[in-house]
Image 1 (tube, rainbow, N blue to C red):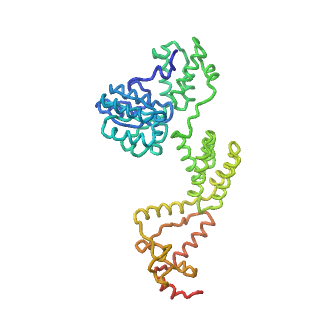
Image 2: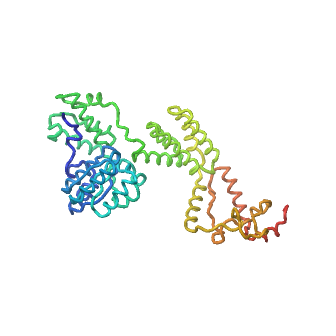
Image 3: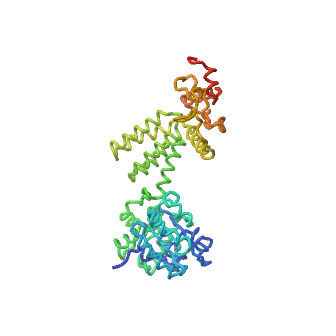
Length: 426
């Protein structure tokens, strides 16, 4: 039985790879590694169909190195142990692991020392963002190399190579330029998708000259290049929040739609709630509450109707006044707490020990509460919250005015003195 076209014409040397010049071109990282005969460990990440596994195998072949290919989803510990034993007899050995973001901790612990000492050179392949999905211990031992989606021009070159390749169609398939460009444009940078459609066309119109109309008749659905595990997914989530922050309601609805098309209600609702509190915040707290209600409603009715309450929340957040004052303040507080992890003053402790009655927290004296010092002595004058004085929100202006008045109040840690200065009932 004839093997699939994409498999038959898979490059065996990096010189045969289409695109990815930043990796395999004459100034590319992998090209220079091969030129110097210095194998390295690296992780290839990028969208499906961009040639990650092909690059890994072509790299091994070009180095004339022994390689073993495993898949993190199906591989067990014994197979990794066997691979390590095999590697000790063949130096250098490259261990290619597909879906490396799915490798669990016990397999990582088994593998890491042998990557460290060079028994194996690890090459991971993944569609996931390695900074999010790959364990730090593995990342620190590998170079992270992005495999980019091919351009339309590069895919056309690859399709033409498949037509002339003796393992492909050996010049027996005739297809016009317009059709090739149409396939390249529709495949969204996924070369495997493009090759699969070329193969469908060849089967459908055997021994016929293929024109644009024939191509369109077969190829009716473009390749929608995003699912929950791909980099493009994270990009869409990021673009959604930035669009809301920038009050671009049209862009925000578009990126939300991209997430809804793949049914990713969880990522969309989580990001909307984070955006509400991070970017709208105290400028419009009611919008934050309405966003939560819309999310609850979306889960109650489920998809596809969930898009209705979510659209209301998106428009509301986009057109609302914005304030990052609270978000900036808590991040500033986190930095200060990390830099100076100071102890709590005695009168603020839950159960203070050896504290006189005069120095205990005055639960029954609310008139004293705003005069008390709450920050530790070393940082008592720290200004963590910075009001957004340019806010267009009436509510935030009210909070800022109140904050200014409170900042005029002198605070003290001398409870005995405060209690004497402000007699009970003051």
